[in-house]
Length: 340
Image 1 (cartoon, rainbow, N blue to C red):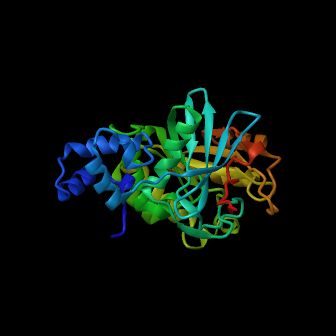
Image 2 (tube, rainbow, N blue to C red):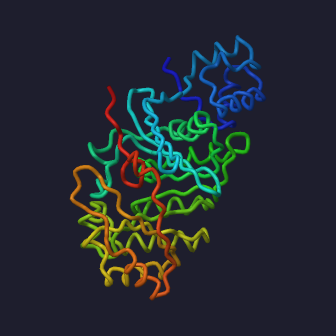
C-alpha cells in the first residue's frame, strides 16, 4: 500500500481517516498539533500510543525538508534556504526581517513554466507542483531553524501559485488554521503573472489575502517581450479579471512592476501604468530590477522620474525595499538549484 501525505490533510480529513482505522476522532487534533510543530516522525508523538504510531506509519509519511544550504545576508540579516525535498528536488525560500515582523517568501512549484525574461526561477522549465505540505514546510521549518516567529507570508518564490491552484488553496487553509500556525489571511500575499480564469476562481473563495499582479509593462507589445504568458492573456483580459476580483472581495490589488532600463521605464509607459492602476483602484509597487545571471536586462536609471510621472497622475506608488541582494535572495533571483 502506497503511503499518503498526512501533513497535507486538514483535521476533518484526519478524523475521517482515523475513523476508518477505528480510532477516536480526538486523536486528529493531537496529530495535527504535532505536525504543525514540525514533528519529524510518528514516534515523536508521545501522547498517541505506540500502537497508533505504528498504524499511522504504515499508512502515511511526514514531509521533512533537509537544509542543503543556508545563507545569511551580511547587509540586512535576510536568510535564504535551499531545501531538499522528499524526491530529491530542491527549492529556495527566503526569510526577511522587517520592523513589523518576519516575512517568509515561499515557492509553490519546482521550477516554473512562465519563463519571464527577468526571472531566474524558470530556467529549466517546470518540474512539478509542490504539495500543500511542501509549501507549508517552508514556513514551518524556516521558523524552527531561525527561531524567529513568522508573521507574514508572500507566495512570490519559485513558481506561479495560481498554476498550482488546488495545492496552494490547501496550503492556505493549513497555515491559517487556528490549531496550526494560525497566520491570518490579511498577512498573506499571493503574486500571479495574471491567469484570468484562476483569478476569477480565487475571487470565488473570497479570501482576505492580498493579490499582487506581476504586470511589468502597461502595453501588450512590451509585456509579451518580457512575459510569454502575454501571448495567451492580453493585458485587457488580466485587468478585467482583477477588477472583478476587487469588486467581489473588496481587497485592493497591488501591481508589481520591475523597472528595466529602456524597456518599460519611459514617461509614456508611466502614464499608461497610472491609468491601469486607477481603473482597478490598485497600488503600484515598483521593483528595482535585480541582476540575473545570463540576462541582458539591466536596472532602470529613471526610477525617480518614473515615480514623479506616476504621482503626477495621482497614482499611489512605493518602491520595494531590496533585501538579500548579496546572497541572490532578492526578487527574481531564486532558482531550483541543482544539487550534488
